[in-house]
Length: 136
Image (cartoon, rainbow, N blue to C red; front, side, top):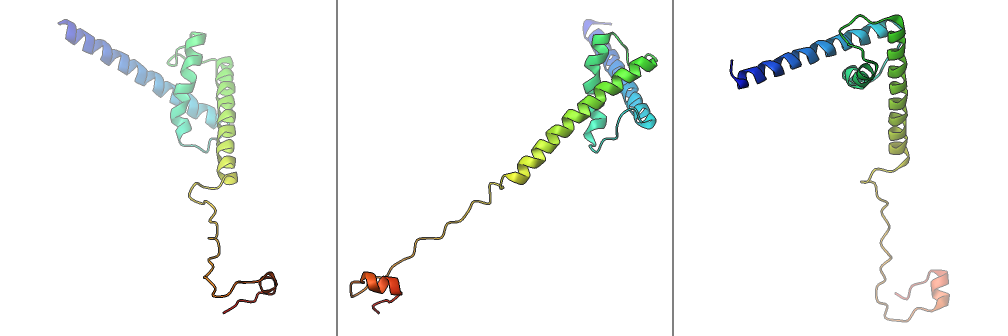
């Protein structure tokens, strides 16, 4: 096997390991949802966010997603995930509030054009202006 084939093999092995870890994390996610340990999510992206959000926790704690997890580990994972959901909810609320308060850019107020005056053959007096009289 030459160096190129060995490199391809290492990348394939690494990719397979990442897929197995991601599948394991999705299994943990579904398990935590089924047990009620994590609150339900209204976002479809949260399912895919779960592995990305929790990989740093697993790395910092020295855990492997493919190993069986203890009750304490699952509780820590649930805590981290629920905190992530709360922060995401705050972002969504802020974005929604901003969009409700600020007018859309296409809704700029239209100012009425200044009234046009036609040239009058006679000068208009202040009395005629206050009474709404026009010389024509």
